[in-house]
Length: 181
Image (cartoon, rainbow, N blue to C red; front, side, top):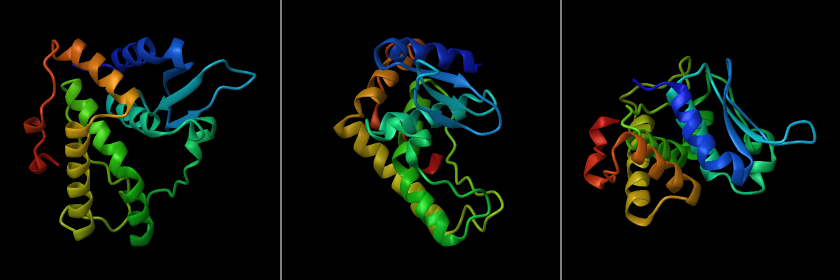
């Protein structure tokens, strides 16, 4: 069984000292808070103590560049649940890479990945063209990452999770099946 304390330990082992960033269990909503004069570490705060939420928020952090890591929530906009089709389309564009990384990190930790449309009250169905395209895009991005390499921070974390959960058995492209999404 995966417990949030495990991913906290792994993340903080990898990044707390060198990058002054810690993973923190939060409450209702996830958020990224850069360090300040009042707190010495950047904080990746995930929701409810959920392992999946931790991996998702970590994935955003792994993609964010240096400038974005100086901004609360990396400077991204967020429309709450109940988005219009146009808003959902914009959401999908910025979620492809993080969700592809989340799938890779999940597999690295032998944890089940689930695509998040994050729009429970909106008009999004599993069979809609936009949902199918979103899943296809995530799958294509996973292929790109596996074939051409992960971002540096994601690679370090993936390797550390593999060491902990998979006994050094590396990931392979054949482990990622489009129909799993």
